Length: 312
Image (cartoon, rainbow, N blue to C red; front, side, top):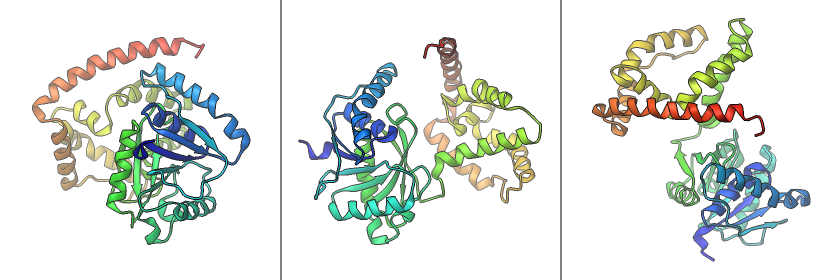
């Protein structure tokens, strides 16, 4: 057995099995621990369903090598442990204390929590050294980007190790610089959903209207580019031109909603522009815009067929 390609996953629910399917497809030896017999019995069917979806997505399928156990071994020597249990802080605290006592410095321990920062689960800075959050998109078998969130005392070497292990497992980890409540996925989602609820409440639009504008307008573009790249491609002058033209209007919306600091400072715009230009130099913008037009046309064509298929 290749020690570097072993992972222990706690929890046989959809997230745990999604992680297991992805790691198995990358050649990892996977162990899933769950005390519930019914949950363990459901693992093969869940992995098979995940594998079918992975095949449809053009991803490698699980190779097998997934073992189910009902209790933790006395000593854990896997380099990566992923806790994917219920979102209850006291239960996670007890579990992490147990995991830390059963594993050594060569093991990093991550929780798949969608909102609880690791410092709430592991309050002792000494214990935080090799602990972090690995918050995936759902389902992780298909959406491979995830956010790695350190505690204040998580060692950089532990973050490096976790990043390397997740990459080898087929994931695309994004490292956060420090903890923020609810991390980044949920902060971005919540900004849109909070405004959607407000607009419905104010009688501006109905629920179906919001869904159609996002599904048929924002969504297809966001499937190809994130918010900064979208702004970069949408406006003459790139992301700086977008900030100059629309920044004041966006700030006014923020002030109307009671935000304390809705303006983008010149220094922040300069930082964002510099990071975008490092990714895509300004002379390459026209070519990227042309690529997006063609890619969007192909995506919409494929999506129409999917939306018409009511057998899925």
